[in-house]
Amino acid sequence: MAWKYAVRECRMHVVMSVLCLVQAVFLFAVVIGLLSIFMARYSGYQPVRSLAEQNGFITNMVNSHHLEGDAEGLPVQSSEAYEEMLKDAKVYGQYTVYAYAGEDQEVSRKREEGTFFDNMQAYDDEWIQGFEPHMQSGRWLKPGNTEGKQLEAVVVQSSDRYKTGDTVYLDNNSTTVLKTKIPVKIIGIIDSNSDIIYQSNEDGRMDYRLLFSNMAKEAKELESLGRDSTYEIFFVSKKNLDSVQEQYADQEAEENLSENFENVLKTRKTVFFTELNGVTLIVMDRDCPQEMFEYNKNRVAQISQFHFLHDLNYVKKNTWHNIMANISDIIPAGIGMLLFTIISFITLSTLMYQKNMRKYTVYYLCGLTWRGIFRTHILYISLIALAALALGTAVTYAAGYFGAWRNAAVQIGAVQVGGCLIIMLLLLLSASLMCLSLAKGKSAKEILQEVE
Image 1 (cartoon, rainbow, N blue to C red):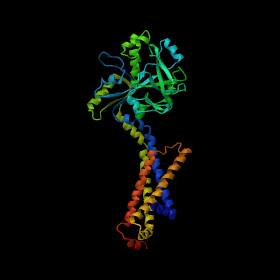
Image 2 (cartoon, helix red, strand yellow):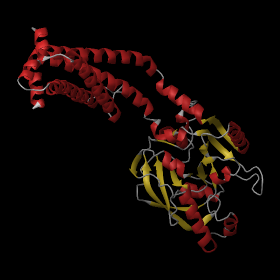
Image 3 (cartoon, rainbow, N blue to C red):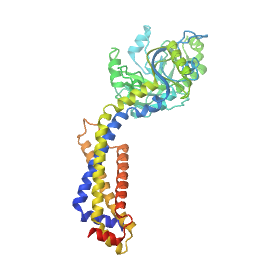
Image 4 (cartoon, helix red, strand yellow):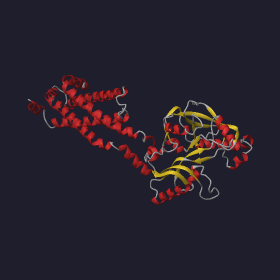
């Protein structure tokens, strides 16, 4: 019954209803615009926020070497080995794998001449869980993968040479040709325009974008090597790689590897040599002493050569500074428009309530409770707000569909709709309080005398 009266009020007060509708549409448009600008800046950071907002530092490693012990001077091949040289720190690394997947006649010819190529990278689980690039097809790598029968890989490529589901083979480890071809199943193709965690962008940015390579840019650099007009890079799980290596080196090395299998066995069941290389995170507990933080940072500087070494807190501050850049200039104007529109909307709804007080008093004398009357008015205002939200969302979406926002950040998403719903609730709450104050403590007779 209350909804029926609310709809009747809309029909009886068309002009006032339209004015409120226009005010609300403008209000929601401002909310959508402000949130869209923020989300456009924040959307790139959100996927890697859990990685970047830790206590530690980020580095783009070139190479790392053991400083003492039996392995002194040798390259660091795992994050675990790196952690042993630090104090209470975790290392999230990626690796160059000195292996070539797939068949390439020029690579085979160069190998015979003593020139070796590699096209494989491995990730620790933290990278696999921390960020998933856009996939053209298939799925992303699986953390904790200890399957030993075959490697699972995702590929980024500049052609359509490989498809999801294809199987290629590793038949060399850059220095030794294997008689047993190790299968590599392609479980996904990375979108060639996707950002991936591979090498840093190295373009002077000091925010979260230090984590990424843009593969469209990477493609030009790789193709400029002159070996071929196409390229492929295979990405695998380090755990999966270690499991496969152990199986082949332990079970089949003597029987199936080349005449140099003794050299393979001497490398502790490592068929493919790996080396920490690329963007690496070194993280510590939030409450670790500053002395430990500085010790580990200095230690990294001794162990590794790198393009940069930055505190994650510094990267985080730069990230939020860049996200909010220029937005802070329009926030006061946006808040001003919001307040002006909210006050205008509440004023109009209060005027309508005041204008209808005599009619509402008659309803009361006819048996309708004040609570029912108030609910009817708030439902009336809610209908206008809901219509404005639906209309504003539809118009914004339609404008975007037809290209009106091509050069702007305006978009409709869960955050924008959620912001509008919060504003709508504030509108209804404010309007309710104003309307309640008009009739508080007054009898029906007093109200009728006031409105005569």
